[in-house]
View (spheres, rainbow, N blue to C red):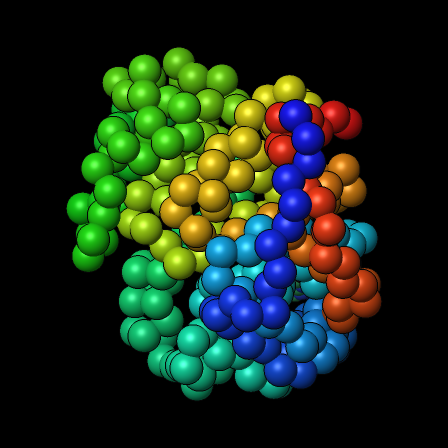
Length: 245
Ligand SMILES: Nc1ncnc2c1ncn2[C@@H]1O[C@H](COP(=O)(O)OP(=O)(O)OP(=O)(O)O)[C@@H](O)[C@H]1O
């Protein structure tokens, strides 16, 4: 299949805006500067891949955008709302209603089926998808009643993606979603994320150490030493299923 032309982002709606974000962790006598002045816009519907060496601040940035952590300095805005000064209760509501997280390890509940793992989230969301529909979207419509132990690693990760999308989040934040998977299985997981991004218009950020994955992105951000040091817009995107590593 031919690479897909990337639509221009200039006119797209800004979902997140970060200004001079800093994050310092105090470890005893030592200050760890995880972020050192990050400026960033994320646009509605875009697929962003974030690269950078270990310790460069990728997870810290993602966690702040998703309301799991707060910055030490600077500001982060979600639409018109200043998240920097939102209280814990508001951040919890923000995460619950608007953010889908996917991590390297799937964190499924072993005693629940795929359908039940997704239903846990849909039961507390204001406008959820049916668990069956979310699982069908990631290609698991035939595995609804399987327990995690009866699913492969890639299938478990796709259940985790279904769980994240079932509340119809505005943004999907994915930290090394293929980090524990072999290449063929990882490609299948990326296809699921690509499908969600295309079908639902969910702004998607994927952190990875794998530079090959950057070829499927609209935009590639590179971090180093707590800063964004590179930005590249792909004129053409490669479909996930064409990726090899
Ligand atoms: N909770 C924490 N307490 C103390 N230091 C932390 C904490 N979280 C992150 N750090 C430090 O902040 C820096 C940035 O970490 P971060 O996890 O954001 O990097 P990363 O680019 O995601 O790395 P990796 O690719 O290895 O996951 C590192 O030096 C890390 O040790």
